[in-house]
Amino acid sequence: MLHLTADAAQVEQRYGLDAPRSLLFSAIRLDSHPLVAPLIAQQGDECFLLLRQQEQGNALSAGVPADQIRFYAPWVTIDPRIIADSPAAESLTSLVADLAADGRVHLAADVVLAHHRVFSDAGTLEVTADDQDPVPVVAYEIDTAAVLARFADWRAEGVQVARRLIEGVEHLGGLADELSAAEDTRFPALTALAHERALDAVLLAATPNYTEVTGHVQPPGTVAVWLPAAERLVVLAPRGTPDLPGAPIGEYPSVGAAVAELSPGTRTGVEEEFVGIGLARELERAGAELVGISTDLGHWRDVRDHEDLAFQVIAARASVFAIEAALAWAEHGIDDGREFTELDIHAVYLDKITEFRTTHDIPFAIEPYFTNLHSSNRMLFPGPPVDFPINQDTTCIQLDAGVRVVADGVTVATSDMARSLPRTEGGKEAYAFFFDVVREGIIGQLRPGVVCEDVHDGTLRYLAPHLDRMREIGMLGTEIDFDTEYRKRNVGHLMGKQESFANELRPGYKHVLQVGSYGAAEIPWRYDNVAIGTEDLWYVGRNRTYVVSKR
Image (cartoon, rainbow, N blue to C red; front, top):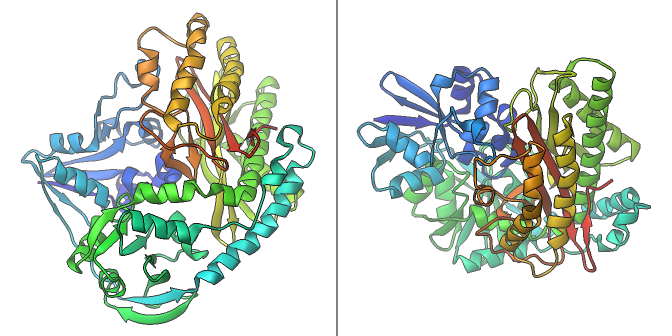
């Protein structure tokens, strides 16, 4: 029997990997990081670390022996040489099926519900799972009016700050008129979601969703429950949890028991990409019929981003200042003949975030969200910085990063943008062109009524006349069908307190952009000895679309 666990402590102890710090996807997916977390697979004396292939460079840089890793979900690349020596299973399910010699798989309680469902649906695996020990909880009812007032106060201050930041920025003229603190649809929109999915209760365990409904930091083990029929909000916290908002209304032997008693029916929406199979089984034993709504909740956050536009502006302006300043420092250092490391660039980047906040007297915290910073000499894979030398031999540095704006511990906005420092002639020419692609070829398409997947098609049409030139300058080969490969990835996405995986600019995504849509547009280009990232944040306004992260 193959045993799987996602226990982060075991992963760190056995392989030296701290997933949120070492792995890019674990840092980015705030509402679904258990879905992409490393898994330990053990069968008899054999033990492997199961990873998405996108994390290959990070795992190897952290010192995990290659023979102890098994990859899945092939990474999309326009240079097949990058992954030629590292085969990857098409999916986690197919990898697990290959590893399970007798077709039996047993999951620890911490393995995410979504994995249990796809393994069970495969039809070729016999899947069992551990239960989790029940934890007694206290229920607190939260006054939704107080939540709205809390966000309104933050937003009013945010609008003032954002207006200061963009005053005099010519290409953002008119954006100040879009800033408002008056609209807040979080609870009506959540009720509408519940009605659409015929839900009696919505369980919110992932931090971005929990903080969106409570306006407070999420203590360990705490979840929120939205009861749409009565429009009640209840927080369930382990007994003894201090400093919780709301009034206590009862005690229960477990989360499952509490949801069963509080809900008027059995249909319960859960974040199947976040909750473990242990909690899911606890809810089911208590009588709940679980409905997966991770994507629905991502959409719920995405389409309300305009309500937090002021915070998005703060995040975008902080990011472009810090990223461009850090790469300028690196460029000057290389030109002066100095040698330093990726971590030195990262330190400058962090200092510049602090400088931005201090210079502009911003009353909110600005913290790193994720950081993808690497020299192309080290790897073409995305990943956090390590102690790798930067010098005259460096061919390119990519800095793709985001910050989060935090009010009293609650993330109210995030950013996601990229700049690069190419050092080869071909890389420099390509990088200059990619700004045209992002700002004209992608953002130039964005207006009310445009469908996400159509933007991807338009981007490929924009790129097509220029591909021969990319080949001439050594930035693209003839090994692959470019359109076929690039259709496997997005050219941008909406934001929703994180990079959105609910609404992407890629084939198959049918969301229609509206006034107020906010997101990122990007062209990642990794070929030969150059890894370039070019990404800007955009906002669809009433009269035009803005490039919010342009200096």
